[in-house]
Length: 122
Image (cartoon, helix red, strand yellow):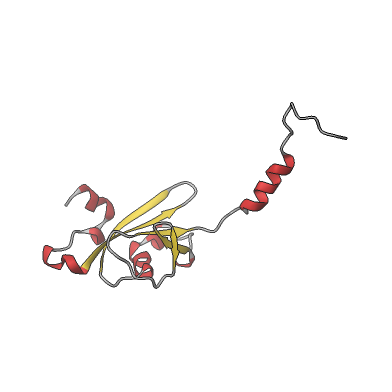
């Protein structure tokens, strides 16, 4: 067993050479505010994003995070849970935004102090 297989657990054990066409190597990634967690999986061809998230075990590892209810994507593109996976896909779980970027940008612009060389008209 390689170091990578020990880190990823039994689900990522290499498939037999004769089954190479029926197996996919998939990564499932969850980034939390204090830690990022990645799980390497070997899944059968025809598996979906939802299957990968369920097999990853992230919902058991982080019970306070609603893993099944998070938006998901593959390599930065949002996809539906029933999307079929291909070999080498990285399934990413997206947490909801905690701040509205537009509102924050407007707030920063409102409180920004003028440049010292700019003379404001009264």
